[in-house]
Image 1 (cartoon, rainbow, N blue to C red):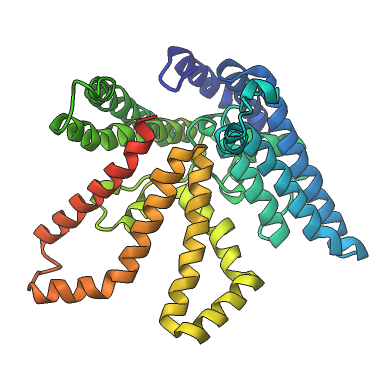
Image 2 (cartoon, rainbow, N blue to C red):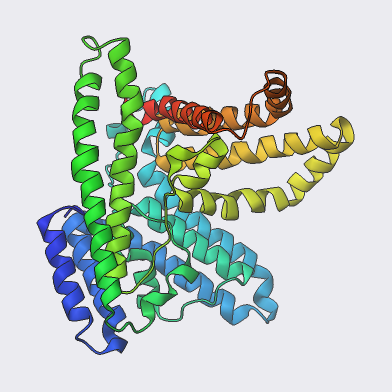
Length: 404
């Protein structure tokens, strides 16, 4: 059941109709039922076991944290939190990143069939795993109150509109799942408009551009040189229209139920730098990686000690740059690994880590160069040049998404 299928639209129409007829205290139960129907119709049924394990791990660990917070056993809260995160990350890594962990085995001549693992990743595993891990960490930090109802926690992880394409939601953002929602005309009107706009992006723009890109990339021996660049420069448009179109459908569907999801795109192709681009593209993934990966790393004792040693040895500015260099490497490696393959590590992790770190390192030289050339950095023409440059940088990295 895809987001653009008749079955999905029928499920939504019936679901919204029933949602506003039943008692408001039962609305979250209907959302849970709709999520289960969507899961079993879209994904492989047995993979729900992985989702149940993730939710059960999060529920038991956070309940234990809540009950032992002010007791002598509270010293073990950190170990429990780490174990719960490790279980979720481990299941995800084994199922979604087979290419990575099979790489050293393939070097030794060991094939998939000899390992004996033929498991399939669960629907939306990349998204719900991040949500569950974020929830566990938030409960450990005291930023969230553990959910006592395991079925409500399951709904948080498996809320059906965001299962396929996200966004990566925080628990605090989805607590409205359990609230009562009365029928409001503007929710239906604006939600329907958002869904229609998503269909236009996906079925009109992405599909049409995709025909050209597929024709060129499927015959590289025929279409070379100039034609290759046409595919390289058009593919980001196809990817954006498809991905953001799905997000429009997801956000619109959720709005029909009176639930607001976080925006995931903000006109990324108007970005003037690669750093700004990633603040506008897949916003929730970048925000998650910063809050739960980068910032904890930078605040950790080893990194604090490394920062002090680097500043003492190389000076304040260079020492700070070295710390940022290490932190950003971990951040981008995490994002690349999350996508699940070696080519993503190249096209996302290494590519953007090098681009951003070089940009930061050479920023003073660029400022002097633009001053020497008397470039008006606030002019419209300069802004257009910066946006085109940023688009080209992204297009090169996106090649690794399109070509196996």
